Amino acid sequence: MTRVLLTGATGTFGRYLARELLARECELVVIVRGRDEDEARRRVLAAVVPKSVDAVTTVCGDLGEPELALENRASVRSCHVVLHAAASTSFGLTLEAAREANVEGTAAVLRLARSLPTLETIGYVGTAFVAGRRVGRIYEAELRHRAGFANAYERSKYEAELVARASGLPLCVFRPSVIVENETTSVPTALRACLQLIASERLTALPSPPHATLDVITARDAARAIVDLLLTRQRGHVYHVASGDSAPRVADIALAGTGRRVAFMDLPTFEDELRRLQSRSAASARVYGSLGSALKILAYPKVFDTRAAEAALGRSVAQADPLRVIGRTLEAAA
Image 1 (cartoon, rainbow, N blue to C red):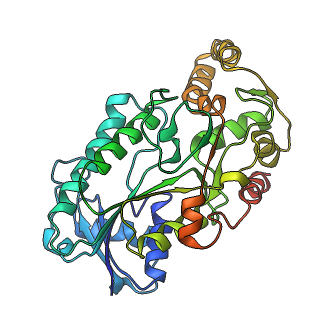
Image 2: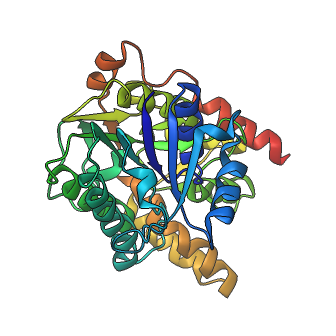
């Protein structure tokens, strides 16, 4: 039986990965923060809800510590596979804070992986948005560029992937796009805030070309693709876990999530509009200020090529229509 060490199991997307691994009858070892092992285990079980608790070993640790502050290092030594999915996805972090969470945390997991005598593969969950301010078609084999980044999150994940790929470990990189949840009909915080403002007509335009797409994939499809690829012991490959050429238009995402149509403008004009909206009040400053760095990604439209992932899977990465999930979010809020 494959024994998998997973980080980020209690996160929004990590719980989907945990459930997929358990569904494939893997033994799961999860590193999670907690005052003690009992609290850590309660957090894991609340998030994952496995059919058999015997299939999950909880190890109390902290990715913010240099050696992860593991209380039970012996439990991880027999793992065959490591899947590092823990990350801070906040667009509002400073670059220093984003690096601490995403770059230094990744480096700590890599050091742990290097110490495992039974290690066969390590999977690193990055993001397709390491492409930063590049535009057009982005291929899976590509990483290094000088286009810059729309926010600290993108840059920190780019730097973390560089660290992972330089480790010399048997690595496979997975780059999801924007993930929306199937079970709770939930969308990421920044996108949800944007849709709420559009729905209430407090935001009527976006910094995007009129026919641009935004790559969105459901959490279940993303998790299944990653676990399928991981368990075949893929090494030395990079896969876009994304909708690719089937990605929806930004206009259709806004319409599905709010029932309203939006206008489009270039980034400098949009930033001027945001400053005007922020000046209305302290509350407006907080609301619109937090959106600026997140919505900048719309100004750099791109298509994530998924041919390598599709060839390895023997199917399309995205199976479900993410617009249906986004549409149900609107229905749930009604």
